[in-house]
Image (cartoon, rainbow, N blue to C red; front, top):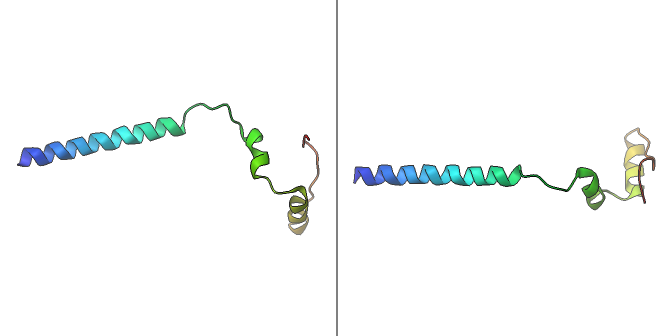
Length: 67
């Protein structure tokens, strides 16, 4: 009985490490997507960015933006 509990514990620890390693490999894998490519999907509208910048004492410009 004691050997069975120890065996189950070892199998559980092994499975945990296998899943953790798989998750780490998935999160750190190479990708072709860059932050610059994904920014337009999450960016606020130009008007909202301009209002936010002026409200916080900054200035928003169209420099560097490509159509």
